[in-house]
Length: 163
Image 1 (tube, helix red, strand yellow):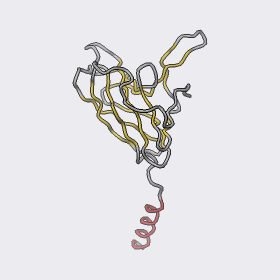
Image 2: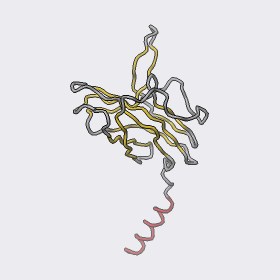
Image 3: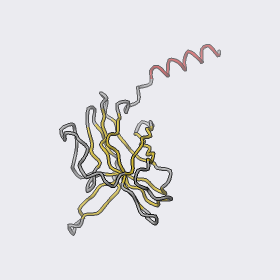
Image 4: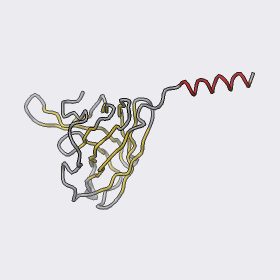
C-alpha cells in the first residue's frame, strides 16, 4: 500500500505545472530614505518576466511595515491624482517588463516600524497568483533619479489605469 501511495504521489508531483513565475526578475530596485518619524515609504524597480509563461504579482510583503501594497496613481473625478492600491495585482506577460517608478506604479510601505537610511538594504517579498514567492533586496538610495531603469518600454509594459 505504501508503495502505491508513493507512486501516486510521485506521479502527481510530476504532473503539476511548473511555477508560472520562473522567469521573474527584479532589476534596479531602490527605495527612498525616510525620516526618523516617517510612517510611509516607497520602492521603485523594473519587474521582468524572462520566462515563456505569463505571471501575476498579487501581493508584496515587507517585515518592517504594518502593510505593504502595490500602488499606482489614479486621477479622481475632480482631476486630482491620488495614490491607490492596485487591487488586481500586476500581470507580467511572458518576456514582459513592468516599470514601478515615481509618479506611477510602485511598492508602498505603510506603518513603518523603522526608518530607511541611505545605503541600507531591505528585503521585499513578491507573492504570485500561483502561491510562489520571491524575496529580493532593495537598496535605499535617495540619489537615484526617476526613470533610471535603463530599459525599453516595448515589452508588454503598461502605463494604463490599473484595476
